[in-house]
Image (cartoon, rainbow, N blue to C red):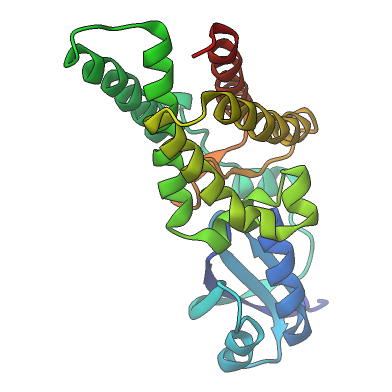
Amino acid sequence: MSSMSTALNETFSLSGMTCMGCVGRVQKALTPFADHVDVALSPQQAVFTGRHGTLADLQTALQGTHYTIDSLSSASVLPTEPVSLAKELVLTAETPVPWLSTYRPLLLLIGYLLAGSVLVQIGHGTVSATETMRYFMAGFFLAFSFFKLLDIPAFADAYAGYDLLAARWRGWGKVYPFVELGLGVAYLTHWQPLWTHSLTIAVMGFSAIGVIRAVSNGQKIRCACLGAVFNLPMSTVTIVEDLGMVAMAVGMLWAGV
């Protein structure tokens, strides 16, 4: 009887990754320490085959980044022979998450902002469509910049996965949260409406180009709209979000408010 060749597969937990760009960077850093390394985004882990580096070596390889490899979560000896296609599908299939559950944080935030935009006007005794849009856009930019500012490097990595400018200049991903913060303050204080609306159209319109490109190409990446706090997938929801802001800015610019 021929003996089946075996190899030691070891799984380590990772943290700090937000997109496939992060996966590529981590895999490149860890590859010298094993015969083969598979890095996954969900769950965040690295599976080593024939590891020949210590845990300290792996941690040193990621030093200076916001990625961490902390502990050995499991170890097993697995056959190197190919697994049958049917069995592989069973092992790797993921249970689909309902759409409402996936986007619940985003929908709740938008609901809160819309309700707040109306309520603040009721307190002033009048409600108008243009003022509702202005307050909503102020809250939108302030809230979304807040989540991005919680972890700017992680947002910059995720944003570089689909934004055309951030992919070429990572600094744009670090500046972008402050641009949103500035727009939020501008809408809240009604500062220079012409410039504020124009900048919104330029920033959100350009961002939408990258989103549309990613969705059209079927890229399975993480949306960075709420920073690295929530794991929201890139989809048509993100397109509607960006183009919706452009449409409101155009409408307010057209109305001269």
